[in-house]
Length: 319
Picture 1: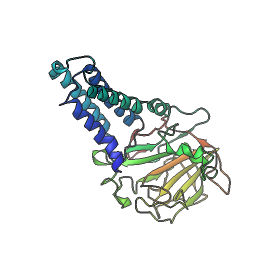
Picture 2: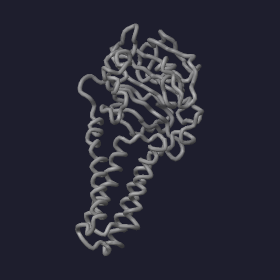
Picture 3: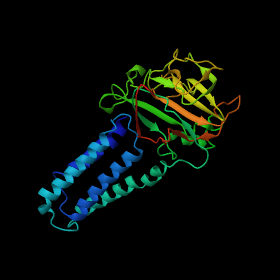
């Protein structure tokens, strides 16, 4: 937790303090510092995982950068006395800023490629949550924005049994001030905004499996023996959809139930292999009887929208 907050907040703030009151006295140093901060903000907005800090941290830092640059150009431009550094320390600082800019920017194109829908078959679904503001914490077609794609690595011990989750989307709910919980990482699942949120059927079909009764866990405990926790597996025509990590005692359906899009399935909980309360949803071709989540993964479109990490979705009570 501390390293993430340090990297996402303290590092850019530190660089901004260098930009504002202690402006480099050469243009190369100034430009390299601006590039370093800009690259960090690009990286954070594209693939940073905003679970501890609110989503609006990046727009705030971006606004601060614009104000600082404007202040330098208006008020401190006269203090910039040369194009190139004049001593070794200034050269080292400029080089350090340029290296930081490059290192921060290098992964960005790959992460941006994760916003592209993978080729092949996709499935169209309705969004499975209602009444609130939600954010995607895993989603997209590249591992930098979707950790679930690691399951496609054949060396992963779960690769065969859980292959179907490769294009999964993980969703949290945002509350006041854009935060997903009351506290940085509270142990009580009920402290998370998405806890007990109503889960809706994203498609019409038959309930293939409905597991209930597994306990909610304290954060960050996980249940690796029951990866999906309490869950509902729907068969919607030629594909299956899993909705996982539900609250015990909340399921409204049983195996064999027929559901229509928008029917209530249960509530979000913190059961199974989950670091904190969230809704996991993925689509796949049919798995085997022994490994129901082993089908071929299918990218999902939610009313035509391909969900990628850090995207926000606003819904109302009618959905």
